[in-house]
Image (cartoon, rainbow, N blue to C red; front, side):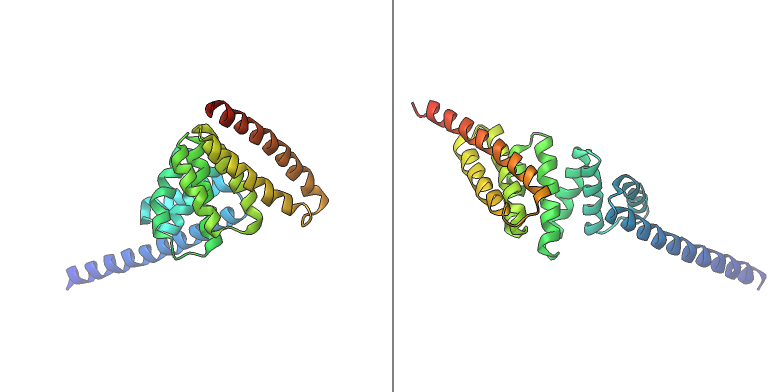
Length: 202
């Protein structure tokens, strides 16, 4: 009987401790999400990683960890998390997926994995907002240019030019300057690609 009481006391103590730990973890997760949505990616990353060690977070939270690494310029870690999480997130909202694809594309681009970057940028175009297509075509142009795919680079720069030009009439003046600056840059890129195309076709 005494042994049973001791066992019961230990069981209750462990159960109460487990409930407290779960409550604390729920609060930690809430804090990590709050940091994430407010752009405090470093703070969010620290909490997410700690929770992932204890609980093995689901693919969506793994993608959040990947996004945090991307914003912290930890591109190798970003692709590890995003590449493994993305195939399991096909049921998510289109624009949410476009954020994951773009971050994965950018991370691969920074690691000079241009083919993988192209694959992700192309997936962005399938689900992103119309206003985001110009920048995505520009990134595609860059990736093709680094692979010396001059025709594909030129074609994507032209599409970027078309989409960004269409934004000028829909944006406030403060955004016009950055769009015009990007368009000027794209014009030079197109000219450079056309020069290479001309030289290689001789």
